[in-house]
Structures are given as C-alpha cells and as structure tokens.
Length: 114
Length: 115
Image: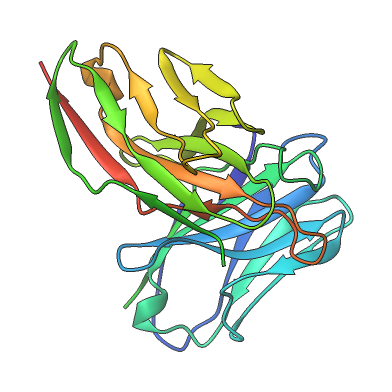
C-alpha cells in the first residue's frame, strides 16, 4: 500500500459526460501528479500540483482540468468525454518538488467511456 | 525532449533464470532514474532508483546502475521467481524549474516467469 488513495476505482460513463476523479496524497506529501495510461499512448504525464499551485502541464487536453485543495487532495475533471478518453488514470505524490524525489502511485481509476 | 526506450516484451523466462531488461534514455541535464513495477490489476510500485552517475539502485534482488556514458539504466535480477511476473517500467525525472519533475516513462516490458 503506497498510502495514495484514489476514488472511484472504476467509472463507466457515456460520451459527452463529465466525471471527477479524486486523489488523496500520502500524508506529508505536497506534490500531486496525474498520469494517464492507455494501450496506444502508454503512460503519459498530465499535470502536477505543488502545495495548491499548478506546477507543470503535460499532454493534458483542454477538456481536462485539475486542482489541488488546501488539504492537499486533488481532483481531475474530465468533460465532454470521448471514447478515446477510456484509460487508467493514476495519481502520484511526492514529498517535495525535485527530480530525485520518488513518486508514489495510487491504485488508479479505470475510466470506460461508452 | 526527454525520452526513455526499453526493450519490448514479452520476456518469458523459467524460474531461477537471469533477467535483464534494457533501458536507455535521452534527457537534458542530469536526470534521476527509476524502475517501477506494475502487477496485474494494480498501480505502479517503485522498485528502485538512482540519482547520479554510477549510483546503483537495488531492492528485492533487483539491481540497476546509472551509466551516464552509455545513457543506460538496465534492470537485472539473478534468479527470478514466478511472483516476479509483471510489467516493468523504466522512467526518468529531469527536474526543470519551469517544468516541474514529471516522470517520463518507457513503454514497459512484460515479464512472464514460468515454473
């Protein structure tokens, strides 16, 4: 158990809908990251937050947004969902903002868009 | 941009065989290097890391050495078990002030160990 929790574990929804994925980082970790894992794209970095502020953006679509709250939990919002958004979404956390700090991953949320 | 290339699988081995998974990288600056493992239906678990040239990361019988001259971080284990069957990911983190410290992953290598 990494100490990172994600809810829900599975999500099935229809095209055009909007969903929210939730992540609670390990106790004491200030950085939260979101990644998408799909068969065709592999593991792709989406976005990083550090202590409530957006830190870096990766291959995140404009239909997707995220935020980190004062209690450090984070939410990833996916809207106008398309079939191609079906994937496993991982949240990770690290204690600080530096390349040598290891990131600990949650169990993921499997999103299926039908 | 940064990239990680690792050998494609699947790699099929017998129990107690020697495992090597090749990983090479391209990065600006001096990245930290990681190996993560993903068991079926689970998230990624950190297996080991190395943060500078010639560092050796090790955990659970797995080892990898950060080779700056060959830009490589190959994963090895001397004697695999059935329980080592999983997908292994090589990753790097090259911290840049303007870009945070995202992980860049290789494509993953599936390993299947048969009894």
